Length: 225
Image (tube, rainbow, N blue to C red; front, side, top):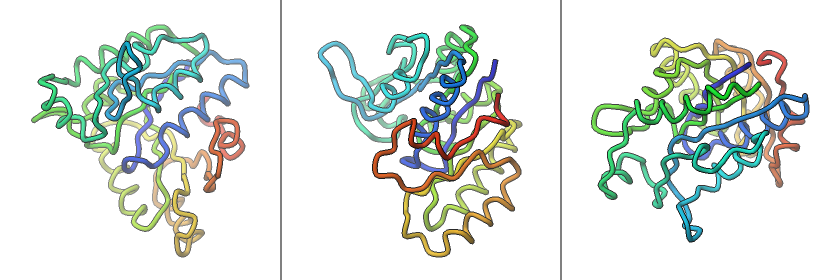
C-alpha cells in the first residue's frame, strides 16, 4: 500500500495531470487506485452539485470507482484562492475537516492512493491554516510537481525547504515543462536535479494532448511502489 500527497510549486503546474498519470501506471501494473482532491476552487454546476474538472479526471483513474463526493468533498464555484472563496460563501474550511475526509479514502487501503493539494504549498484555508497543515496532519510522503518555466528553480527549492521544515518526506519530484521555450532548459533541469533532495520520477515534455497514458511514458513508479 502506497499513499502520497501531490504538491505543486504553484497553481497550474500540472499536479492533476501527473497524479492521473501515476495512477494510470499503477492501474497498468494491476494495482487498485484511489484519489482525493479535498478542496477545489473553480467548478461547474451539473444540476446536482458543483464539480471540478481536475477532480473528475482523478475520479476517472480510481479503480474501483469512487463517488465524486469522496474524491472532492469541498468544491467552490469561483477559481480563486480557497480561503477567499470560502469567506464569500460564508463557509469555514479547516485542515482537520479536510484531513478527515482524506482519511476516509486512505482507510479504504487501495494499493496506490494520491491526495492532491490545490495551488502551492502554503495556500491559505482560513486566517490561521494552510493546505500544508492538511499534508502535515496526514503525514504522507510528498511528490512535488515542478512547473518548468523561468523562475521554477527558486519556487522548487523554496517548496522543498518548506516540506522538510514541516517534517514531511519528499518522496520524489516531477519536472513538467509548461513553457517549452524556457531558455537553457537542460541547464535548468540539471540544476533542479542537483539541488532537490529527492529522486526525479520523470521529466514530462510539453504535450499537445497530455493524457494519462501520454504522460505515463515519461514517468516511473519504480521508487514509489
